[in-house]
Length: 262
Image (cartoon, rainbow, N blue to C red; front, side, top):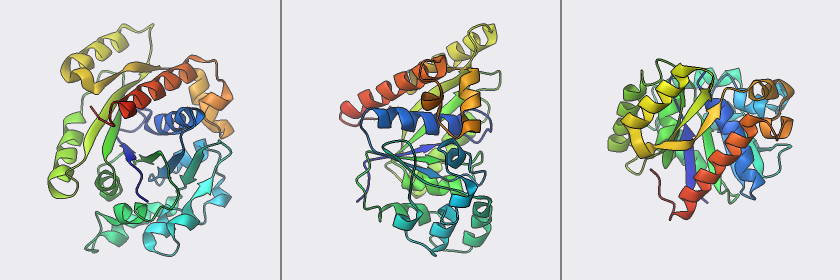
């Protein structure tokens, strides 16, 4: 049973709010009654941590799944968040690129595995590592859209063209259905003129590809992962929670618009 919405959350730059967006957008969508699976494709395993999965619970993780030692049903773990399941990651996943390098199906391994999902999820989010390596290519080959978090800093657009080139390469060689779901501006500081300038610049360059919702720089968002919960469970009333709820609303609006992406 292949989910209709398979979304790769990707940006090769680290520290842009990619995992934070994956965890909190998934939680916000689940709060509306949607069922969500998060696939943690980053060896750092931060999405797993943010969803409350202890490292002791990660023996059956994405590495074991890709290696063929377990089935996808065995890899899926229920979280304490109603409506959100996860395939966790551990540092073992860092060995995958080397192990798959000589395999003929190395770029489509994740796509083949997702086809075996039995649960009818509304959304599958793939949290990609901060690189354009084999794990990210697998995610883009499996997804039908890509969501790109973009930090409101001076170098926000740096590297974006490289990511777009990778998306085009995947379209041409592996996955012609891949579209841009949208770009979300993160770590916005309303007290900083640079944030406003960057946001304006990004919107001028990319227009309707950019979501209206902007994720603010918010201490509660930063604190939540240390407690193993999304910010929506840590402090539902903070600015970060309100922003992710609004972003979920935009994503649902896209879904209702005949499933069209931007």
